[in-house]
Each structure stands twice: as C-alpha cells, then as structure tokens.
Image (cartoon, rainbow over all chains, first blue to last red; front, side, top):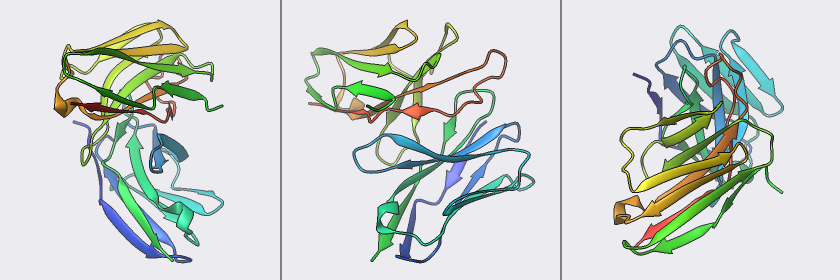
Length: 109
Length: 117
C-alpha cells in the first residue's frame, strides 16, 4: 500500500539550513509535493518535483529526490522564524494525494 | 480572496445536531475533496468528486454525507456525530486531466475546526 513517512519534529537556529526528510513507497508516483501548514490555516503548496528529476531549486527551497531509495528531502536555506510550521510530504500514485504525518519545524531566534 | 473558501471557520455542535460545512473554489478546478485532520494522525481522505466520479473512503462513517451540486461547491453534511469526530476538516480542489489519475497538486482551504460536545 501507499505510505509516506516523515520525522515528526525538527528544531533549527535562525539563519541555519533546515533539511526535512521523507520516504515514500509508491514508485509509480508522477509528482512528489511539499506542503506547508501554518497555525490555524490549511495546507499551502510549497513546491513539487517531477519524478524524473533529481533536484529542483526555488529561491531558498531545494528539493532532492532519490528515486532509487524513494527518498525526498526539502532544504530551506537561511531559515527564518516565519518558516516555523508543519511541513507535509505527499506522493501522487494513481489515487488522490497520500500525505505523511508532517514535520513540525521550530525555528529558534 | 483565497482560491478555496470554507465556512464556517469554527463549529461547535452537540451529538444530536445536524449541520453542514461549505466549501467553494474560485480556481476553475474540476475536482474537489474533503480531508479530515486529527492530531497526531496523517491527513485522512474522506471523499473526492472528480470528473463527475465520486470516490469515497470506505472507512468514513455514514454520519458524514457529502454533496457536490456543481464543480465549484462542495458540502459535508453532519448528523449525530461523536466526540471523536472533532477535528479540522479541510476542503481542497484540483484540476484533473481525464486519464492522468490525480497527478495535479491540491489547493486547500483554511479548514473548519469542528468540536463535537
């Protein structure tokens, strides 16, 4: 079956880089996604990567995909206090998106 | 105005009440979804309306009843709920291409925080 695993918590200092990791199970996923959820809000699409790519960079965000190991990571450079949120990884097998439990990122000033 | 609007933002209801959650999307999408978000659990897909097909998670109790009168509006009708149904209910939409099987990103509303007393 489909399953997406993430560590639940990450704490970093302001200005450092954050790396959030995710593993998924369905190799047929065409796209893999990162969403951000701030308190009291829904999930906001941050970025996504097509399954035939290894890396995608978008300003402070870098997504790395290791398709062989089914491992996805999100790197946030120069992490700011406004980056504090829950980050969800999601895969897209031939069903609606399957989400992980989310990683709560805490940024220490 | 956000692309996906949910009302109300907060709802408190007793176990014998009947209420409805409303979702409207202004993105021109052709698929809409209900998800349930409970503490310490993965997001749970409840219902999907996509390209005139309805897909449901068979584990969702019958006390939750969806309605999708057109591609822009989605409702979740609630009756005789239980305290364990208290959660954040999220609506989402996407633009699906026939034959591509859910490859499009979802756009979420801000959710309705439901408390069942």
